[in-house]
Image 1 (spheres, rainbow, N blue to C red):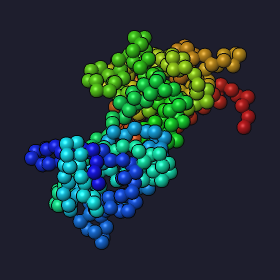
Image 2: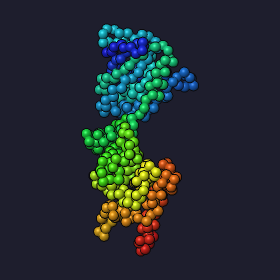
Image 3: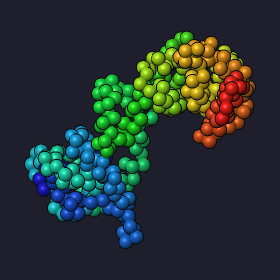
Image 4: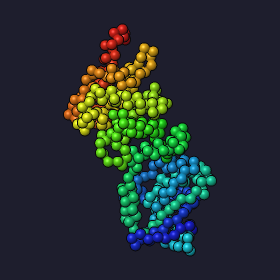
Length: 367
């Protein structure tokens, strides 16, 4: 097969870079001529895991919908010789090529061409090795897959925020149906608003969170909690029916008042935040789980929610959880750790304390 391409060298090893039509890839994957070297009991020297049909199908749908993927597929021809036919053209051997990296993309392309024949003209970059050494081939696979590191979660959140601004939240949520984007865009319906809220609180000099949320790639300095921990903790708030649809600035203002009331009641925990867990991962998770119920209790005579520091402080004052020592590193909350089980129990106990207060105030309650 002749393709556009050129040779190049790395550390004395001759490699090739080229372009292959999706239709040609689909034909060779279909025939089994281009395939990964899968480990099986019958093939103990194989080095790749079996294909995930779901991953391949996701990529195929992504291609059919016009997705752009600049990543190359890495091939190795153990038999035959890759030749430069003339400048700018390569002749690839017929027969077996081992897909060293990109088996899900290759199978996804096959499925995409089957689903939509126009995809056959989709052009895919390939890097070509030409070595008979199966060990060297396997070594490249391990290096590629063991040294890759996923995108940091906090940076992915920042990308989502930019994507919402550029394309709109509804467009992104609709794009999640295209399969491969589901993992990229997961949580777009609330995470982007959480990032906006974190930014507002961290930059507001009147907020208890002023410069206390650590942004991506920033030094710790005086910050006490990472952006990702803070934004994750906001999920129950942003999925609450009352707060869904409300502007990030309004929710941020309510949370600023909430934390201001907590700071008034637990001043020491804010003066020495590293000695307490109140503003760290477990603290923000617990307090934000409780926030929605606290907001329901802050109502005036007309049934309106009044989320001022004074109104919130009145609801919280006197609870055992509103004492700095409770949140100390060696206090009740500190000893529970940051695991989901400990956080869930702390939040449940906090909510039980609130409900007990409500029942004591309303003696007419009959259940």
